[in-house]
Structure formats: structure tokens, C-alpha cells
Amino acid sequence: MKREINVKRIGMTLFGVIICAVSVGIFKIAALGVDPFQSFMAGLDALIPIGFGTLYVITNAVLLVFALVFDRHYIGIATFINLFLLGYITQFTYEFLQTVIVNPTIVTRVICLIVGIVIICFGSAFYMTADLGVSTYDAIALIIVNTWKKGKFQYVRIITDVVCVILGCVLFLMSGGGPAQIPTIAGVGTIITAFFMGPLIEFFNVHVARPILGSKKEKT
Image (tube, rainbow, N blue to C red; front, side, top):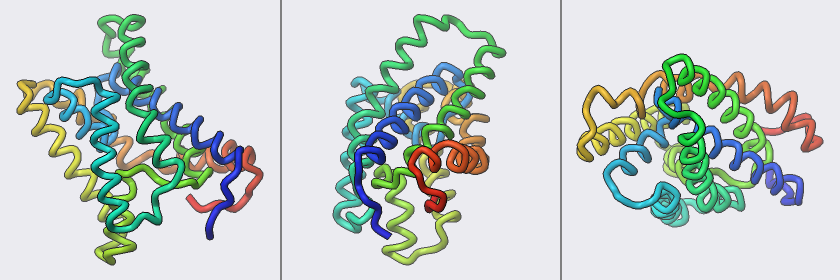
């Protein structure tokens, strides 16, 4: 069903993207692994000498072309908010936190990881409940499954996530990074975000995002 676009939904989308972007910055401080797509972005960022925010826009613009060519149904306001804001907010958050959390201990990094997971689930709940489009990366799996009729979503998404992690690690090594540093971009945080975020996102969907929107029955 097509969702009505209103100020509340746009506001929730904007809030959700900002919160998710802040969480990625926290994940980077934790250096215990980021979500699969950000693993790819981390490898790309290590290899290409431009600001992360600009690199994020360029990468997602390429993916946007893919989505527009094969099925623009998944593209909406949220797609463009994500494309133009997330990378720059992540870059700002990470650079700011580096001035506050200097040489973090493993305990501090674990705390940052936990905080990052909670925050990204909270932001994702708002982003998903607003339902004004998906990120360009999310659109890839949806197009493969629903447009091309290739496989089931959960399996296709696992494949795309694994490909992102592998590419991220290869790009990181190509940039001169050592194998021992790989867990900083593809580690325990990557596993948690790939497989175990669902229940926490649903908790925030049910208890926070949907009540704010004023809807008891929303697709996730």
C-alpha cells in the first residue's frame, strides 16, 4: 500500500537517518566492526583519498543509478535524505568523537559498540516506520528478489552483505592495511548488525516509532 507522505513521516525519516549516521560514527570509534555496507565503505575510504561524506554520496549515487534503471519503485524521499546526509554526519561524528575519546581502551570500545548498536536500531525503527523509500543499498536486494525474482530476501541479503564485507576487506588490504586490522571494519560488530538487530529494531518499532506515527499496524 502506498504510504501518505506527510510532515511527520519526513521528520521521522530525517531523525532516523541522523541517528543512524551518528551510530556509524560511534561504530568507527569502537573499531570492532561496522555493518556490512559500512565495511565496504570503510575499505573504499581507506583506498580513496577523499572525505568520507563525499565518497558516500558518490558511491550511493552509483547505486541509485542501478535502482533507477531496474526498479525505481523503492526510491523515495528517504533514499535522498540517506544519500546526501548520512555520510557527512558520520564523518562529523567520527571526527568529533576522536577529539573526545582519545586512545580508547577495549572496555571503552565495547561500550561504544553497545551504544552504537542500540542507537542504530533506534534510528532504523524511525526510518523504517516512516516508509518513504529505502537506501540505495537496501534497494539492491529488493530488486533482485522482487523485480528479478531471484531467491528469497533473507538469503539474497546475506549474500549481498557477505559480498560487501569481502570487498571491504580486499579494498582495505589494497590500501596498505594489515590483516590484523581487518576486525576493526569487519568484526564482532559486523556479525551483530548483520544477524541480530531485528528484535531490537522491532522493539523500538512497537514501543516508540509506531506510536509516534500514530499507526499500530505498519510493515517493517
